[in-house]
Amino acid sequence: MAYSYDPQNIFAKILRGEIPNKTVLETEHSLAFHDIRPQAEVHVLVIPKGPYVNFDHFSTEAPVEELVDFHRATAEVCRMLGLQPSAGGTGYRLIFNSGDHGMQEVPHTHVHILAGHPLGAMLVRPS
Ligand code: 5GP
Image (cartoon, rainbow, N blue to C red; front, side, top):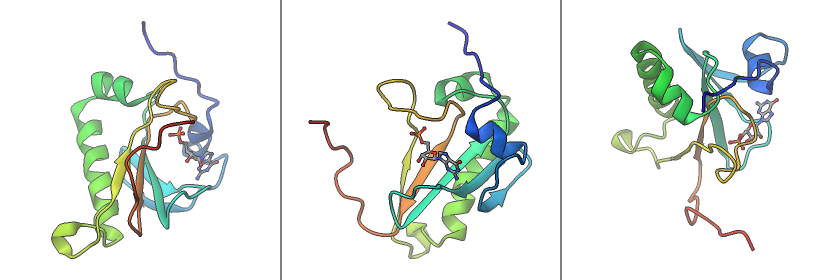
């Protein structure tokens, strides 16, 4: 089934400048900004500027320049925030929630960068 992108989703509005954001990094094809409801001391979202619903949509349909830009932008944010283990940083966790079971809330591809303290178990099962 083909994906249908909703241009009224909150991240599309952020990209159009209709809603403010705390930008960390902007590149040709990607935008990184602080999550409005941080779930860790560091909680940054990185989104592609193109209209992709989720990780699957982005990975299968985006041109390679956009994929590389997004990948590098994510790594660059981690570098800018001093999180890279290779540079003495304490590390981070990347999460792509996708679809219903992934509990994706905003239907525009995004990766969560979480860091700042030990993040605990990877997954807590819902009760
Ligand atoms: P998801 O559950 O879709 O993976 O994550 C969506 C994330 O977007 C949530 O962590 C939520 O706090 C964040 N978010 C929702 N609305 C806004 C907004 O208007 N601005 C920002 N900066 N983050 C938002």
